[in-house]
Length: 301
Image: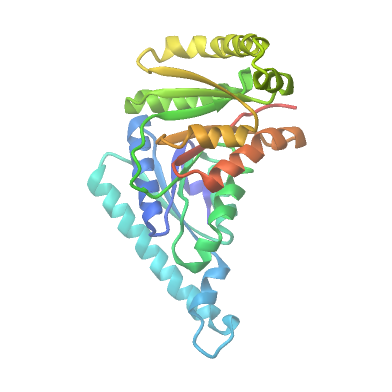
């Protein structure tokens, strides 16, 4: 796969023919039209895919050659079909297609180096992709250098609004900006959640001590500081502020229960950053019932 065929700044949509992949394409098309960026449709063929079509009574390796050729033909047909559908819906879009061979995580990460956003489904097609549900999205999120959006299939629940989790410091500006942009573009309310762990705060709350109220006030002031510029930049967005103490991942999951989208920051490059941000993103990606966007914090250690 020649990643240079993907133009710089492209919106990437992972395609595999599954329902959540269709949702990913829809989201990517909308984003490409909104930002006037090119769209790149990517499909990955993994060696594991061929295991499931080996002839009966033969080892997987004996069916690999024929299987891979057949899968490549199907993949090209799938990409052509999706491209034609996109062209019919959004003829003004510049659309590219890429077929990669290898681990889907690495294929997407390679293309992501030239992308402004990667969009993928949370549930793949076939038994192998179902087993790799967590590993593909989480694996990509650990290393991707642009925003990653993971679509969830609809579950019938009523959802509204966007949730963004922040730590009330400038490190949260990238996910905060992403959340404001999305809320503004879609006319959705935005909830900004600052979840933090404070043993003293938790203890005084447990005993009904008023010091807990003052701790909340301090955190709200920090939150107000990082939101000040965003409120001026996006005056159309209705913003709700929320505080939560305790385990951050549980607080985010609870707050995201009725949201359309939850936005999280993630950091690559240090053990501390991975522990603080990576673990929360991993938990939410694996268990959230709504669409999840993971935005790199771009910190320099």
